[in-house]
Image (cartoon, rainbow, N blue to C red; front, side, top):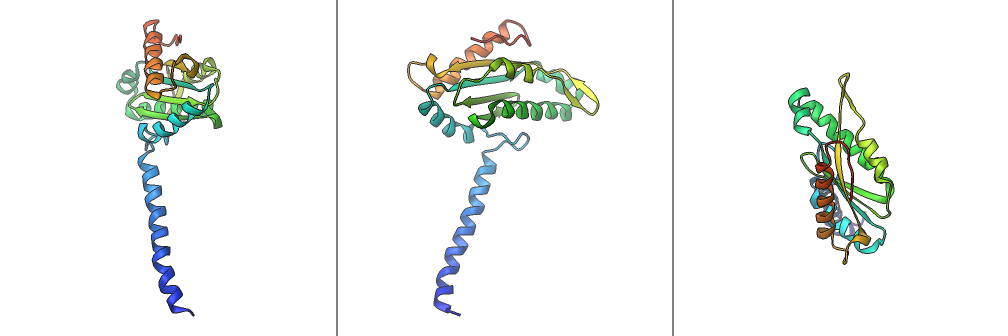
Length: 180
């Protein structure tokens, strides 16, 4: 047994374990505890990188329609089920080409490296959610911004454009989900 070698290796091993624990805690802090999606803090750096390197990038914002009514009518557990289902549907739509996030409340965002079929997302998001044997109607307004619509690839500008498109969709009536 080489005692000097062990005495040298133990602190390094301790720091490696400590670093791993801190990295896992940081990752959890950047994830929404309910949905498992990235939070804004965990999403922004990755999204900026995709936007700056992917000419066909697509940024979108999703806002659930009449979400307060879900909580008021069916309870907060049902509301949580709708949020989790929305996160799952957004994640499935993004697949490996994008990154979804929950901004808070009933607001979600995503960025993809390629232009994907947003109509397919709208259909998926509008499917009722089964909670405790009750089908809860779901609607979502989706705003989209293509990187090609921006003079410079700025995430702030892309989110602003997607937000404008989302509110334009809300102006056309709940659950109709028009974009651009």
